[in-house]
Image (cartoon, rainbow, N blue to C red):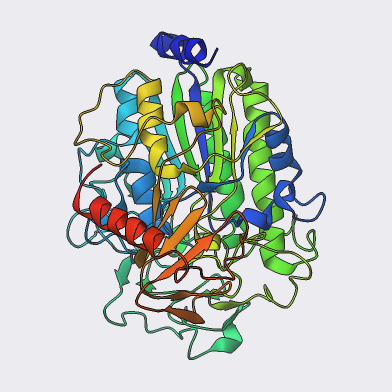
Length: 493
């Protein structure tokens, strides 16, 4: 039956290939959704998606921070293979080389209309960026027909949207300047005038103030183009829904990368107070509303049965990430990483094990669960192969066709999965091996744990919280997994 199902998929004409909507949430932890243990009613739309699709319990992003995760997701290449794929500043140049095979370029080659809406954080342009003219290269150079972007992150300047290579609502008489090297903004900074801020600071984020929120980096000009944080979710959702409506004749690919739950957490007033956990919890409620709007649009346009929806996150959760928004104080019994240790920035499981749901009517059985080890690195080749695009060994090099796992048949996942958080770790079956060094512990980057010369080894099936290092008891496993990491680093397998 499995062979017949995959053969059926493989022989579909391009006209009947599914639309693809990839919803990529920012900083959403494994335990931040109700189906993974969060409070009842927190994420009803995500719950609905799960009831209609396949839920993964062992799915992983490729890195514990956003830029390398996004790079790997789109290119099918581990980010550690390329220099400059760490967390990018707001004025970084294009990190993905123009012409590189990506999910978007593969699907475009197969006749899809491709779009990206939301957080980019993969750099733009080449050389000094002129934010007042056409910004290129951009997503169009790697296969996207349409883009509407947050250039970097919500906490970094420039705090503007970029659509089709141009800053939205820019007044030419008020040009934008951005600097990450020297101060160019003579107005009071967040560090100098905390009384001007509607959101206090705990660390950094103390330079140019926009919308009463202090940011990383310096920016002048562009007053008419600056976003209002409380309206970001509405703006991005409107653009995503519009893309679906305009391309409902299909096939289309939408990469929808939300700003929630990343800092600064400033949800729309409609969601304030809804979670009982302060801004971070309210941002989760807002995120769930976004998912609901996408699902509602697919229903309205008669596309539900024609669309493959993938919902997941770019890395694990973080609480205090520089703004005093009471994320720790109002957490209560909520466990953002679920049963796993640490979160964003960490090589522990909480850094990369993320929620993931796949819905594809007719191919994915509703309301099912899989414990297959799945890596986002495989999404690119899986979609390329699904669309019938032939790729070379140099294209999407670390990605493999994981369609069987993606649709829940069979429950076999990856043989191994390399993960990045500064240094590397690896999952092979139930084993998690972390190379020697140190990593962040907890739900923030400011506490660390040190590993000895052997690194650390955990059996995550019996010890999901990674409380007991068993490296000393299993030197043979340590040697094997350490050698595998070195082999993967040195060779495309």
